[in-house]
Image (spheres, rainbow, N blue to C red):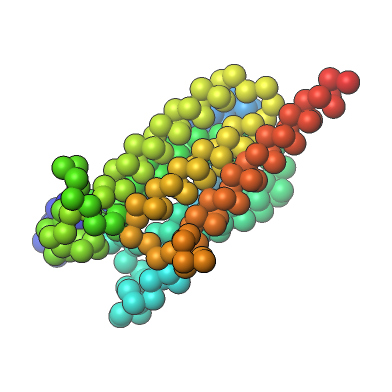
Length: 254
């Protein structure tokens, strides 16, 4: 692939960083547009999104090095975000905690905000996975199918010269598809929070199965990765959210 987009003198522009930036840009744009439909103040959304993204990147980076401590050589490599190396769940955890703080402080309607964030997050992650494809991170297991990816650039994070399962482009396409489905649900939702619940279910199911194709260690009972355990929790939580919100509809109608 192409981890380096281009160079201008001593300045190197990494494709991963560009794609992450595009994901943040388009995700934020969608978030602002949908927030206007929900009657949420633009400045509250922008502040919440900005600080949540900052916290999310920090969390994603920390989780990456917790899983891959060998990359901390030298230690200041933790600052080289543009080279790749972000763990989605770490980003969501830190970003969500920051968002909750602003939601409570600014009194933003939490379920409405969660719904539109789900759509924006899916779009942003779709771009991010394109960056993963270019950088070679989050690579799949060895695969000899015609559609396998072979990384040859020495700057790639993936093993070189070995055909690998194309988990990154599959993940990118899946996230864009999830975003589209969530938007269709959003247009027909019966109660705020429903879209968020479906997001947890859809992404949790997809991530659970794609992990079998990724070259991630199966540390839980020798069969599942840590990400798969979190995926199961997401599906259960998403189902609980939908049932809770549907119960809210019935209660309000009685």
